[in-house]
Length: 169
Length: 93
Image 1 (tube, chains in turn brown, red):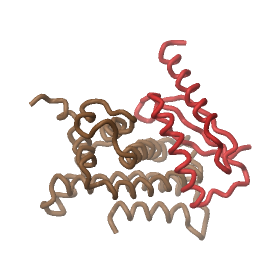
Image 2 (spheres, chains in turn cyan, purple; image 1 turned 30 degrees about the vertical axis):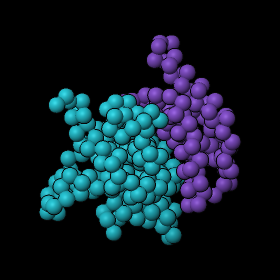
Image 3 (cartoon, one colour; image 1 turned 45 degrees about the vertical axis):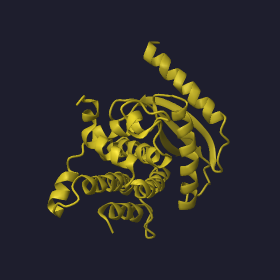
């Protein structure tokens, strides 16, 4: 089981513990785990793409290159039905439904994770958390099916080096 | 009302029309749209789904709801709205 899958499983166990209903703390921890499940799922693919032959230790260092806020901004660039430049020339008029769904879910999870971890006034319901769990599982499945595609390569490189697409070389 | 607020209200009205044109899923009584900024300060909208008070939201229901809310989200995004549509689920009173 990958680290991302472990995080997803952890969220499931927090939400669907047969012994007790989840309280506010369990709901918040579950949402945080869901965000990191998708975050690490994408980052693990990225490290495999950019440095497939490095040691595990170096692989883990590479996965720490990602910046949360930058990832959200880049994800938003992949969601619209008609892509702007530079993505238009890199992958075509639109991203696949799977990639759009991964990007959309990432944005949702990041905002929910931030609220769950820092906003004590956040009114997080069991239904909210259950919904995010379902969406995370779908997004991870979608990512699994496209992670070796050309558009996923562009997505990963964009997450790491978006500004480079604008440079004239 | 300034230009940004006008734009926000226009986007809210457009989102409400898209929601009105979409049949309600079983267990969902009503959907409202709220405007605000997300955690990174970007203008956003929250689609608040009010669920029937006695409805059991199990895993299967959440999976079906995911597809339902995805379709609404994508219609909103595909219509050119600039605010990201976040989702909230609440029990109807």
